[in-house]
Length: 326
Ligand code: TXA
Ligand code: MG
Image (tube, rainbow, N blue to C red; front, side):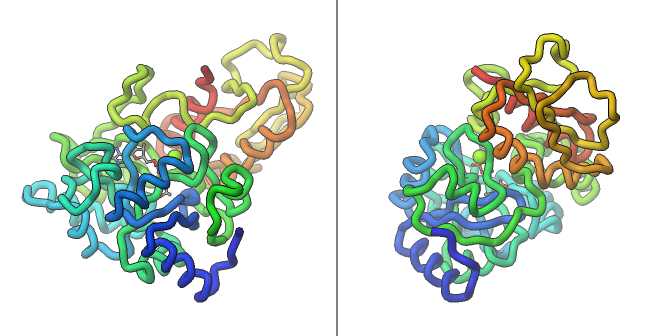
């Protein structure tokens, strides 16, 4: 059931979380499927609902920076300084990988010695976490490997009957998942590009930030980094990678910017994400547009591309995964 975010509904959902149930809730990036991060039975429910492999760790959502101490043990001075600096970007689309505290069940970290934590920049998420009084482990609220949800309706569309409580917080303004960053590696490393750019991180950290290349192998360094992820059911290709003469008639174009009148193909439908080619707008609308095109029965979706820089890095990361179909 989709619930408007009244104080009463938030309390109902917070009570559900505290009693070990799962709740879908809005964040600024995508909707999350939350459970009490300190309750291993509750966390297992998330994996069952999503059909998620137990080898893929979850991000723990907090309401304030002091709560990091409930989930992580930061002993190294170098990591403490990085945490202090990086947390100036909170609340925001940034997940920080830190040494795991013993109180965090191994289900959350997929058996690993680190835990990812973040403070989401959404008033409903913050009120929910505060009211529940527990850290909230939450992956994106979609079946494993499908496109992440950016509205409450998207959650209902793909998890109906599996999640009784869906808090509605409107459209996600960032629209792409958080940047996942390891603060424990030798150099600070982006494990998944996202809503916070590499440049923004380097600015606050005052050190160089590395980017881990997407793995094309079956055994990825972090399972969420598998190439095959975020895939619509319809076959997708990046614009410019196939000759338009090979497109089937039922082909749609997902365009990022203004389109010239003489397109390279007579597309059955053209969806434009931002008439001015603004990447923030592209990111915010991307997953919703992919979901709606995916429902319309096209044989092929051709997707625009942008440069791998700034927010474009995260956009292209998701698109390369969307086109990497088995
Ligand atoms: O924006 C977001 O991050 C959203 C919202 C709901 O907060 N959540 C999200 O969760 O995208 P999920 O589960 O779909 O993606 C989590 C990513 C995965 O790539 C996972 O492998 C990685 O974070 N991750 C989590 N914990 C990790 C850890 N300890 N070490 C390395 N990677 C980790
Ligand atoms: Mg996900």
